[in-house]
Image (cartoon, rainbow, N blue to C red; front, side, top):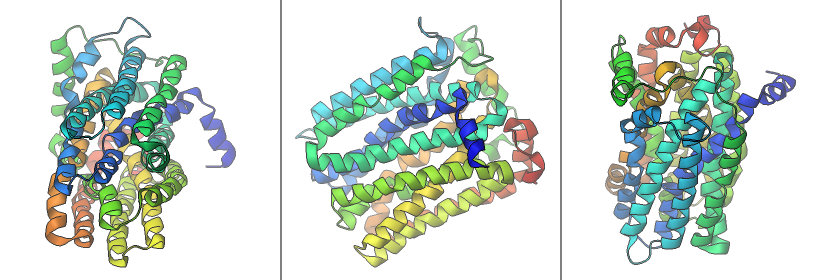
Length: 422
């Protein structure tokens, strides 16, 4: 895709708003996971306790349970999707401010409860964000729209991790969290100027319909078990490697908070390149080939951290591993998000997207404590090698299910050449 074409696509209002909305979606995730790990590590909590804190992400795996309620109820302002986005986003900002004012202190469990509440609100925000993105983007726009969304999302993750680590050294953790909570205003303003979907779906007539309709439609599809297994496994290796990454760099390798922050900050450019390259490549490769290639690159990037563990405290190895992880992670996420969008029936977007993305979050949420146990057993280098092996079954499933994926996605689902998938 030529530069002029990319600029023309970004001038599209539907695609342009994906950047700030993706940013608002990604910011709270980092502040309840990796950045929280760094805060707890600096505060002196042990690795197993930090591993337990990864469970605060549990709402991301359960959000499908209350997604039908958000499908059924319509706020009295801005309509159903935009009204819910406004309410949940402002609530997330308040929750982050409460985390800032509490801190680990002598009762870290209180901070854990607040982080759990923020994760619940953030997962609720994701429910309506995902449904809105799927409905507002036209089918030919989904590949590049997903890439722009991932750019915003990954930028937020890096700003709330790298940026937070750098800020914490200068203004302290409390002020850092307060400042990042204020950044949620970016999403609030965007919601107010965002367009309504061209074909907005009607709210279900009853809660029973909101629950039963999307589940019945999805689970009566042929080969649904294979699709569900693919959703769980495709990014599992990436989730395992990332589960204790910050603790590894600071506590395991001995890098300072500022050093890790500077290098992760460099990953912003790499993430932008990876996500945009992934979106452009999908138009040429097709869905299945993109999932295979990006998944393999994503898995190989885990070996970069194994190399870092072998090298010791090497700034060159640190920078290389972080940059490669961001490029490949951006590419893999673009393909995965586009896949989930294509699997959703537009009558039930919120609930079906919530269900599928919840399954993907299982690895991110539940890998923390087992990963900590594995690190104590085999060490950091072998841990990252195991994370590479864990990624392979998901890639294998893409190949096994390639014909079914082509049938599910269809020629019109993403606006790409269906013949390229075969």
